[in-house]
Image 1 (cartoon, rainbow, N blue to C red):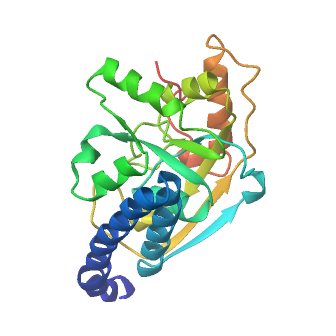
Image 2 (cartoon, helix red, strand yellow):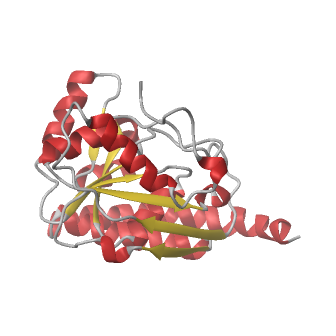
Length: 251
């Protein structure tokens, strides 16, 4: 009965508000990036956008481990990925200056794509290795002074809740930039907006921010060990059914 009552609210208020607020806060981010700086556009526009959508969904977020974040330190943030709402949770409730590694195709979304470009998000063309490498090299100059870059090492959303095998990109960047990795676990977003679905529901989310991992003892040769250490951290709050496949590392 509760879900049936929610459906009119979803279609006539929540979804229209989501679309209109995305346009509004995208324009706000563009203006702030132009008048102040890209960081202000990211932090103010992005956080307000995420909080607003959290309220209208509604989504209740509980955060554990905020004490592990040093606001002056830049990180490579590695999180599991179960829903588009993971982006909102990180943006709205971590209290950081986030930069995303985004698919090139997202640049084509009207207004939103322009906003992402103006605030300094990192677009990657996955079909062109040379272009992708060049984009990451450019990104390295931006991840300084408390700005952090966020990766979903699984590469895509998990369709069944299991933690998928990790790709190497986030870990290679951490070694290149000599930055600590901040593991993050997000639980509950899959129940709010499942992958490949418009079945929006209200719900509760838990985000666990784990202690940062010092990468100074790792090299390219020991990269699998670093990946496995981060994977164990992210898995630790997850139910046993989410433990994933094989050793969880990219072949």
